[in-house]
Amino acid sequence: MQDSKRSSRRKLLRIGVAAGGAVLANRQIAKAAEDTPGQLGIPLGPYGERSPFEKAVRWRRDTKTPETGSSFTPLQDSVGTLTPSSLHYERHHAGIPTIDPAHHQLVIHGLVTRPLSLSVAEIRRLPSVTRTLVLECGGNSGSEWAAKTGPDVQRSYGLVSCSEWTGVPLSLLLSEVGVQPGASWVIAEGADACRMERSIPLAKAMDNILVAYGQNGEALRPAQGYPLRLIIPGWEGNANVKWLHSLKLTDQAYMARDETAKYTDLMPDGKARIFTYQMEAKSVITFPSGGQTLPGTGLYELTGLAWSGRGRIERVEITTDGGRSWVKANIQEPRLPIAFTRFRLPWRFDGRDAVIASRAVDESGYTQPTREALIGARGTNSNYHFNGIKYWKVQADGTVINVEA
Ligand SMILES: Nc1nc2c(c(=O)[nH]1)N[C@H]1C(S)=C(S)[C@@H](COP(=O)(O)O)O[C@H]1N2
Ligand SMILES: [Mo]
Image 1 (cartoon, rainbow, N blue to C red):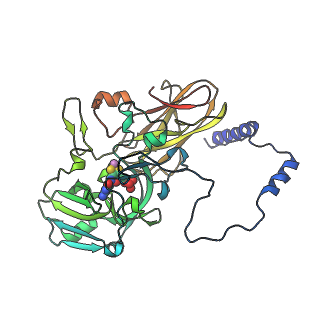
Image 2: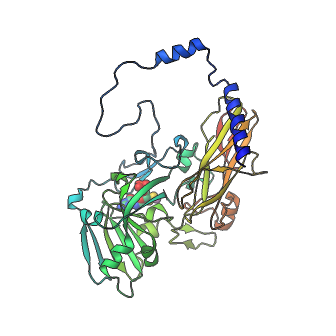
Image 3: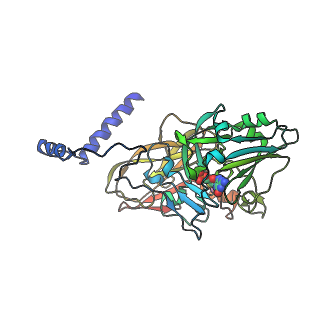
């Protein structure tokens, strides 16, 4: 195993040099060294910026009101397994409120013995945990249901990001207030103008939900819910209420807008699936992907991201022949549960059309379905929870397009 890995690495290097990366004569090496800047650089700064040469940005869909809408993570430019906070996707229903944490309170009330109002400072003092977790909008890649495919991976798959979140377990706060018998739901409400609400079953609230204040080593970004939000491992983005200011214990769900009119799936029999919180295993190739162009034939590394709301990714398989044959991709360790898992596979583009896709299997044994199987089970009225296998077509001229295989 080790040996074969080593020899394939040697082969790769040889091919890389042969492909002409940069075989320099001594004279040219001296010149390249001269070209590196010799003058004094710019001064140190208090808060970091990326290189001015880096251009990856979120893409935002036009909406009538600039405060509402979504912006999408540039997955095609991502490396590794984390999303920088500045590129985390955004979904807001009433803009990003500006909240001074000194004046923000979280109230926990309803069917509890000791209702509480906690300041942000009081919450940050409590025992906390840190977890790297994917956050995905239930509507991510929803355009694939109707095959109105977005032109690139950002616009079709970019409502998903992965951050390190830090917060206080919700179970701790609930044990503090004393949940009364008969309570079975927690209604979370945000402090944004729409007062977004979601109903969360008490069992999940007692299991692994965080009241998060931290993201990637610092406070949450305002767009991500500063100063407090819910982080619900493995559940659709919408339930992860931002700008959290109220948790109310009740004996029934609220049937809020975002769990009735939205975030439900109309099934072929005319009934709707409701409270579909769970996000299933999913994967997508980010290179090569729609809108990119391979500069020529030769060796490339296919790469992409896989994740599952149910736990770790067990394996990812890749096809380069439209689904006829599948091979196992290399997986970046460590594999964290419910986190982006980077997969990679060396691949030679020989100048002929190639239809490529990835298929993820998670540790529960769940296998990412084909789009056809998904439509067979759920019909075509759905907007949410699309996790079908995603095909891209690398065309003979190196251009890559979004296709259905
Ligand atoms: N208060 C509040 N919480 C909210 C929303 C919102 O508009 N207001 N949008 C929800 C939706 S639909 C999603 S997908 C996630 C997006 O989180 P993000 O913007 O941090 O990516 O937040 C959810 N929580
Ligand atoms: Mo969402």
